[in-house]
Amino acid sequence: MRNLLFIDSSYTYRRLEQNGLDHVLAVRFLDGYFDTVWSAHPLDTQPNVADDVSPWGKPIWAEISEKHKFLRGRWGRFAFLRWAKQINGAWALISFSAELVRLVRREKINVIRVGDPLLTGPIGLAISLVTGARLVVRINSNTDELRKETEACMHPSIFRWRWVEELVEKLVISRSRVVLVPTRDYEIFARSKGASSKQIFFTNFGNLIDPRHLLHPSKRPQLRYQRLFGEIPERRWIAHIGRLHEVKRVEEAYDAFVLLSRSIDDIGLCFVGDGPLRDKLERRVFADDLSHRVRFMGNIDQETLWQSMPFFSVIVSPRTGRALAEAAFGARPIVAYDLDWQGELLESGKSGLLVPAGDIAAMAGGISRILADDHLAKDLGTNVRKRAFKMLSPQLQSAAEMRAYDQAFEEVAEAR
Image (tube, rainbow, N blue to C red; front, side, top):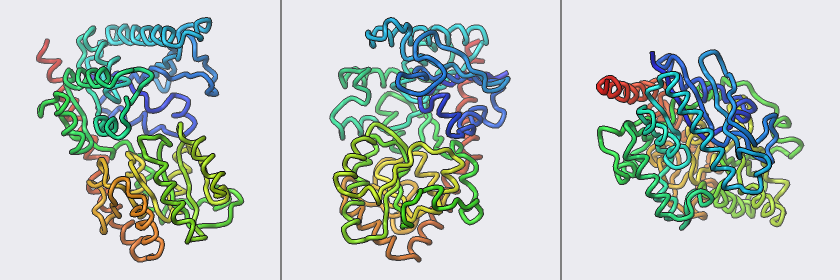
């Protein structure tokens, strides 16, 4: 019997429910490879976020199904200690980790999967060391590259110094039995942190995509324009899909739109997603008198997202992960920086337009080129969808993950 503990901080339990992200949870079973899954989010309930569950207290279990439970970690252990954020938060994480140690021992869980090396990685490593369970970590970004860009820690509220953050990252990756990497760039990064070729397995974003995105845009139900964009006059929409976060370089997408807006009247910019940069972007949009041409959609559900793809004339991607794959399956023409894994998916001039990172004028030029040439737009969209099916086949990615887990379970058997 195969059981899995999956510790991840990408989505809270509430957001999974609200945004119809059932597939994100279902895929953790890998088409029946695992009999039972326990998911866990260390900071699932947070202050100032509408939720029926208090951000203070012991971690609590939610039942997704008979074979899938979800542990909701709290922001702080005690309400009366809310003023002592660091102490209260540390206490809550200790309580969360202790609950998972008890779970692993009680259910005889042999494999722990963590979603990243920095936030959930240290928790998974600690539980692994205490219980003997094998640790599997997924690399979700090249943080060395991001730290170089921002000249700061990825998580300064947790790790005050970059050297501490880098040390923790190296410990988690080097001590993991399996390291999952979606791209060649991430493989090089994992190796630099001590991962060996035996540990590394390639598994990209394919099986994380909601299956509805695989349906051709011409066969998708069509939303009404007003339902999606309200009473804004119909436009050709440029879309950025993803978190509104500094590491995504999302402001550069807006800068490119500002350049285009001076010469093209019938275009608009649509931000699909939310994040800490939203307030700043909204202030900029207001100051530039572009509120009538920019739409902030926030975190929309998957049903709306896959149906709305045909409305987007161009997808702009300074740096995007899974959303880039969703756009590719949606046969959208894409303009992207030659960063991260984007150059692996997009063959410039054939399945997308790649421009140098940070070159806002080149990004604006790429968007303009697509808007001016319907044949180019159609060809780029058709080709990137074909390439997505070749590179990101969900069946192939699930099979690759199963091989990775096979290794972890074989080591468990050998240890016995």
